[in-house]
Image 1: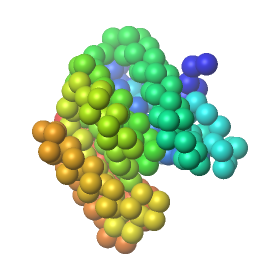
Image 2: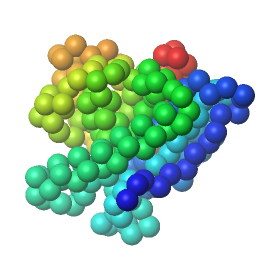
Image 3: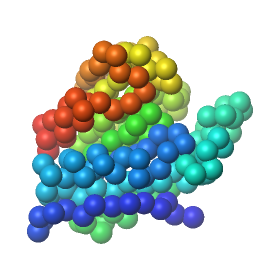
Image 4: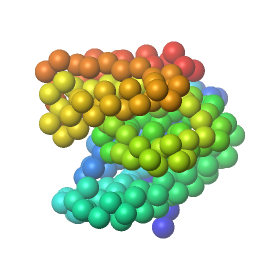
Length: 213
């Protein structure tokens, strides 16, 4: 079954770029739609696509998951993530073809588990995408990342220093690992911010996208 999604079409006559925004564990596309609506005011040539993860969340039947965080079998977690990646790849390929865009025109934005998926997707592509913006995220499988490392897109992490779901130490670990593997990676940590996206983070994310157009 293909992924269901929300979309915001470009406001101008020409579509130059596309942004995929991936939600976190137990959420859905509607949770991050306000981000796309805000950014679209400054990026009228951009097309926004917000997919739902393929699986109903195990702890919230009204939300979705890219892979089951309640699962203790790491092999099954990996299998679920790879199935989700394949479905994401198919949707992205279809949208790029439909809009006559290239990988260099593609940005991925993720929150939490959506960040993990965004990074894994981006590095596994043979052609480099425009950039990955990760809110409250980390790398979920370092061995898988190295195994499928085909490109090194620009990556920017934005994280709260009191994040209780994905501790900021996980973000630092990811940054160090990516730098060691010659990625162009940057980050910003916000004081007194938990597992959330702040207004400052929204502006910082917009600046990252505009800088890498």
